[in-house]
Image 1 (tube, rainbow over the protein chains, first blue to last red):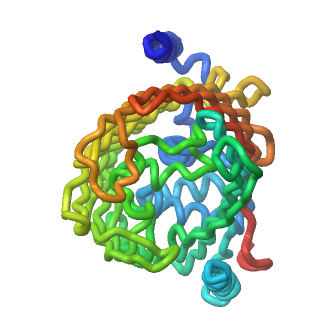
Image 2 (tube, rainbow over the protein chains, first blue to last red; image 1 turned 45 degrees about the vertical axis):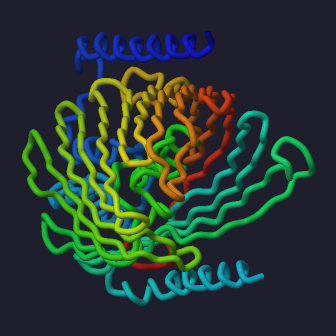
Length: 90
Length: 346
């Protein structure tokens, strides 16, 4: 009984999420900030944002080591590495 | 006593690496020390445990092509002597998760040697404690990560093809079997390939591994990451198969904001749900997989405070033929990052 309840709850939760996605996506980017405004920001979102939030702050001294590490770990392209470097330490 | 000596040696090595890093990169870039400090609590079927955890990560870029990186883990485990009764006792463990030298040969190839995180599916490499949305690792985590989640040997990886609409990445590796304390690794060979579609925010991929010990067998897996660009929803899933069993997990996390840019007290709240199923196969020695089929449902709530502090709590219900259980988790995680040496390039 409890198992059935949890299965039903999980399905409902997943459907609710999917519905939210669909509705929000249909509203489109008119209500949200475009992710394509800055190529560096876009590269950051596409690559780094897949796993973690944007850093609150990074000093220019720290940025290169962080991005180099992500170049290897997240398999950034050379172009994306340069864009993200410029975005994080303009 | 022996464990303390080993721990001392590992820490000395780590500190030595830390101290020599500035000399190595004196003409280059500042090394950084990052990682996480966490305190995790768990109650599984009435058995309470507490785990203080420190995971320092050292990254030393050298010139335009080289990187030295390493991560250690110092973890405590405090629990009752007889699981649900008796006095609390604690033990501390230290391990060396990875320590690798990376050479970025060109736009498509990076060569890594040393000890590295085994790149089977994505959970092991991408979701350390300060990034994972839920505290517990998935049930299928042991598949493809034997014996320790780390491998000792060589790895090549990179981006095979990069276009505006898609990016194809790959990883291939060989690991030697190692039984030395804190440096354990399975003898294996394997690879992973994935394709990322930036416009849709979708990444899918597959992994394969041949374990060249304990009977020689194959592990295979697949993964999915989906982040719709318009809303702060993260969907992650993995499937893995081994002779010892197969299963999957599917996780959705949603920050309560209108977009990924929104920063309000409410948008820092992140409900999470995860569904897992595991189907037992033919047990193989030391596979660390459950002894029975398992269904598990987890519901969690994360709150992201300023200054990289995160609070998390979750409830899960596990159903097995061996007995059902409630799983409660809570934790606080602090993510730190600072230059490992004063001065350097500004």
